[in-house]
Length: 251
Image (cartoon, rainbow, N blue to C red; front, top):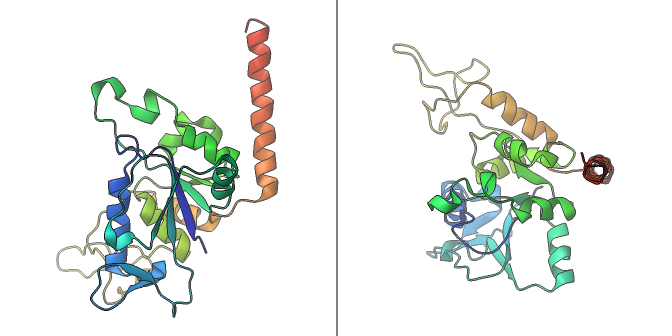
């Protein structure tokens, strides 16, 4: 089961949406902590690993430098790695199941466009170098073209935020919200049957193609093979050599 996800980079809220990721993770745990391997003990607000659960607790790792304040409720869910030695850093990164980008929208005019237009993110290259499957979107893959291969990346439908996509990959399925019924009609689920009691977010409008994209992501899973990494690296090396040849030959 997907257990360890990492966000790598300086702990700068102007670069990465840590607050949004924390809020999404906390909302999921508040909704139901069991799929994440956690529970609450007594009247405490913190979530603790559930020793009776049959699944491995999920851990969100933050690897970088700077000051990081983790919400008290997530103290046992989020693990901060700061100031790691060179070898320890790469060893930690390589041990992760998936890397998240969590790009924050640029707030100032001089950095408008952020990691999509103004500057390249080293986190993308770091994940690739450490052979950590990178969670991307179509937009990310258009900008960082070397991440397009499904041999090394996990293409997340933009309809889902990163924590939601993690939830789908851990469960191996998507419990699609029930569509709103037409007036005088009744709600139906994906199979044309009456929905189970307690269906989440009835009436959500799901854009066309999302179900197919979600199923493709789930079917592809989060694991990537060593052979796949070798094939991807061979293609990147070949393309890099061609670029170097053109530069040396005057293009």
